[in-house]
Image (cartoon, rainbow, N blue to C red; front, side, top):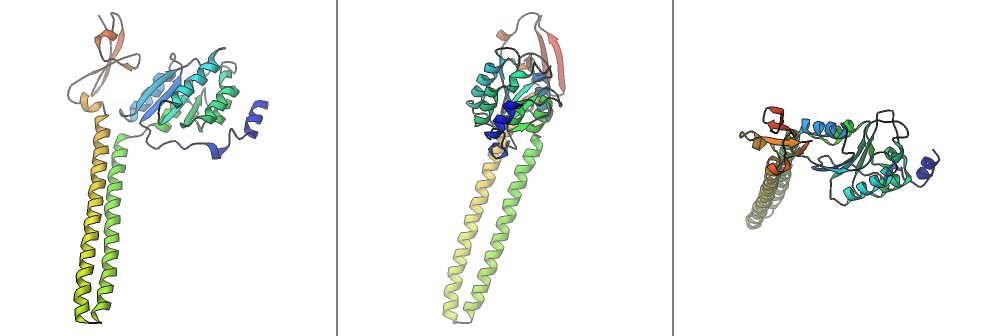
Length: 281
């Protein structure tokens, strides 16, 4: 409690210093222990929503004498990795087990990080100092995954909605410009016929140029959005599985070659309609 008061007085917990989590984080670091169900729970939660978010595990000890320095080093590594967001997580435990997350070094490291961090330590009733120093606190590791996961279909819909908005907005501006031009033409008409002809030609040319410029901008925006959609689709492993391929995972990690397998290994075979456990013979 004394340490908490000291850090609070220094502004380590201040809301104005907290970073906002990105709405669509595609590259996420999971700073947690290699053992236990926490990692699998977070992985399963993300995959319920989509297959395009890349999850990188940065393992660390989460209890014991060396845990404090391990956690600090893992966070620093994550901060240099160019990730969109970081989750610092561990499962439940006794007050003594969670003490590394009450560390001053861990709190100051979280405060200094450039990458947004979600602290998800223990159960709902646990509230270590890391929860205050991080940018956001999640009640559990699974809840942290829920915060950052997003539905890929919703992202696609958001992109197309943005495109429709751009089109509608451009049309409104064109209509406004057309009204202004019509008013100007009406004024000029009452001056002289020769001036009217001249002004009509000039204003028509401007209108054509404005329409062409706007059309080019909309076309460029459509092209950019299409490229983004293709990129999102390309990152979706389900596109490959739909063609009859299978993915092989061992301990939650993708297997890319037989050299990584040995007799007796337990693996998961993932197809487009589900997954099955298997043993290498």
